[in-house]
Amino acid sequence: MKINMPRWFYQLASPKWSYDIMGMLLPWFAIAAGLLLTGGIVWGLAFAPTDANQGNSYRIIYIHVPAAILAQSCFMLMALAGGIGMVWKMKVAHIVAKSAAPIGASMTVIALATGAIWGKPTWGAWWVWDARLTSMLILLFLYLGIMALYSAFENKASGDQAAAILTLVGLVNIPIIKYSVEWWNTLHQPASFTLTKKPAMPPEMWMPLLVMVLGYYCFFGFLLMARTRLELLERENKSSWVIAVINEKI
Amino acid sequence: MNFFTAIVRRDLVLALRNRNEVVNPLAFFMIVIALFPLAVSPETAVLSKIAPGIIWVAALLATLLSLDGLFKSDFDDGSLEQILVSPQSLALLAIGKVLSHWLMSGFLLALLSPLLAIMLFLPSQAVGALVGSLLLGTPTLSLIGAIGAALTVGLRKGGVLISLLVLPLYIPVLIFGAGAVQAGVMGMPIAGYLALLGAMMVFSLMFAPFAIAAALKLSIRN
Image (cartoon, rainbow over all chains, first blue to last red):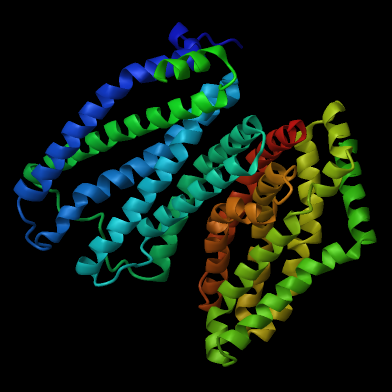
């Protein structure tokens, strides 16, 4: 079976082409991220109404929730990029996946840390073995494993493929882990804290959250492209276009 | 199919001639179990409460320990490469190697577990659940672990890396395995847990061999 992808898809396989495209997109993502994050954080922290039960402490949601969302979408992106890299033998796709891993891990750490800070006033404990917290922690372990695998190989192309296989295996496992942790939690201890069943937020509260989520995504896009471009320069350091780029900067 | 039985037979013969490699994970299993009464408390009430979890964690670590050498010798002496260039399926090789690995690790661990259950004062009505959950759960551990072993076989220091790669993926098996024993202790039905463990085994039997084969290919090419 032969699958024909649009032309731009194949062009992305060229490191130089990807480098240039990302260079063009980069400033736009940076501007969008700056505007959305500044607007969202001011709106969320200063103007959104105070929560009836939690007071002002709920406002950490504007940092916590976008980080948690991004931590998960970053894994999807890595699996997608890794899969593309395996199927079409695209080096650039592997490099995107590799550049995304530390960002995803950082987002997971941010989500866990802000969750702990939020949990202290709300639940009275820094950490509870709640299903969501536990599956986020496992997600962090998966990220760490993938990053360790990348760095364990001296031959970078092999490391890319190994990490892509592990990412795909991890992607299949994530739903299994998620459901088993949820069942484990409900079996072992009654769900004393349900974050899931909170009343629907009024629009004044979720609008800034939406802005923050979009801002996080733009920031993620910016970081990812910047890291990918750097990695491209490093990997292609023998090729003439990289030498031309470097000479231009100097 | 001839190829498959040949692989299983060869690996079992190799394991029986080199008994240390079979016995060491079992000894490790028992030593880890023996550490808990010393570290936590020798009281019957405490031990019988934590026994299901301890035995399952120890079984998981023992399986992990034995995985390191799963493809090592075949990789080092070049027989893996010979199989790769032969017309035989690499996925079939993976199933054969995992089967013989499981017979020499998970299967023996399950047979040994009633003894450890007595040492940890696990209530006798849960022993069936313990053996059953280990029999159904450890094949999944071997299958998933083989992916990690295949990914790291070409690396000089794969040992710790395997644990980092594989342990997060072991968590569902651990949850339902220990859950089955816990349910057995409380006299609740365990069929649901065993069914889930069986489902995970079938699921990983379907997909893991291909991941193992892909990982072996890249390790050989590396």
